[in-house]
Image (cartoon, rainbow, N blue to C red; front, side):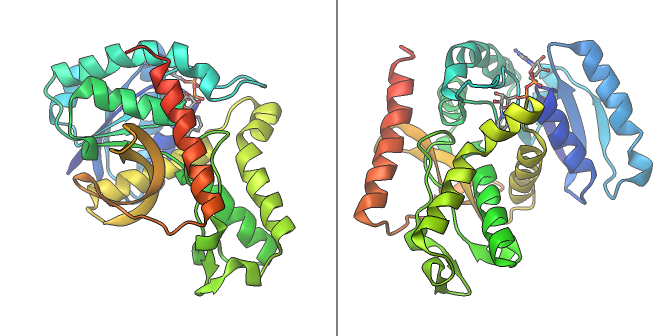
Length: 302
Ligand code: NAD
């Protein structure tokens, strides 16, 4: 029996909810919160009409912040999304302002579960959630580069005719323009990825991953199905106490930021981080990503 409170019922929040309903998950109660209460009522009705066909049995209802008192996971998808041509970092002022109120309201009600953040700029919003909540950093998780990693595995699998689940490759760093693929750590059946594709092919794929959100937003205005599934994957790892390795945004004590790195996720949140052996060039790319996130946080004048 596990309870999830979702704050922000737009494209991303509702894709997450619908993806939850389409899977057998540990979620038994889903409370929906949004500034637009009428929309929430409509979404609750629509989702409840799926239950007769869903593999999960769930109590889905309009929520209040008091619902956070006994929630296992609070998922935050509230806030502005990118318009065509906007970067994720361009959202920083709008979204950092609403997060203080949201996180304060959650904590005022005695929340002691795990936060899962999807709002952009992701690593900054995850950091703010941690700062405002006062929770241990292990209990605050951002979706990080989970979606980017899924995009990477899809593109590699598509090119090679191999199931993406059999491909071990990650996107790490900022969920944003400085993210990168540490190819030195990518393999298929323990065979290094450069046995399958040459450098130009790999870089072409990495560039398509990095630009995927822009390409989708130019065509359909927003991206949401991929992140919805990524959030379900992380929710399942938490509620199922799975110890699954995911590239979530997690606390980096040395730099006092949150950043996307492989980490073990279980019922306590992030149980531990897994450090990758990186080439010198990859170390520089990671440092660049660290600097981008750090500068963004420092410019917030908290
Ligand atoms: P959307 O505009 O469709 O929905 C946002 C919702 O947030 C709206 O329903 C709005 O009413 C609600 N909201 C705003 N302020 C609120 C508040 N104070 N309290 C409660 N609800 C509030 O946007 P979207 O497309 O769903 O995107 C949401 C966020 O997710 C954006 O920041 C977007 O950039 C981000 N996103 C992240 C990823 C990822 O990989 N992490 C992927 C896609 C989108």
